[in-house]
Image (tube, rainbow, N blue to C red; front, side):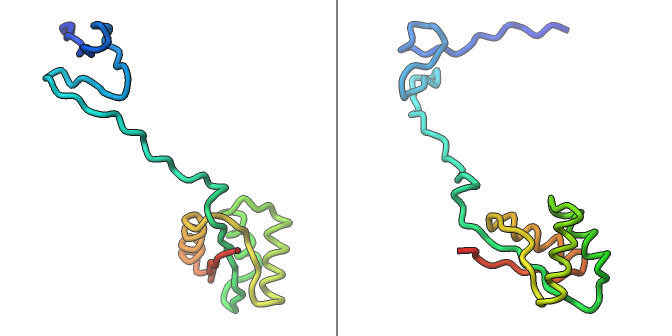
Length: 123
């Protein structure tokens, strides 16, 4: 089934070329609308950094903690081992630094695995 060719709206200021010109767009009914720039998302590099901190507990095994670190973060086995050992010795260890929204996501994910993780501003 073929679709009928529909007329395309044209901009009266563009000489009928159908391409909007300038800051106004013809709505085809005698009204115009000013084009507004889209809001920009902040760059990840410019967002304030947050530390993700792993706390030691007496419930989870070191192997489980290491596996969870590797599962939820981009850490390799050596880094996961070092962080697990540091948390065990000092009571807390920094897992990584990221922006607040991602840090909150990591916190939720670790909590879903029954691990205690807190976040705090890095600055």
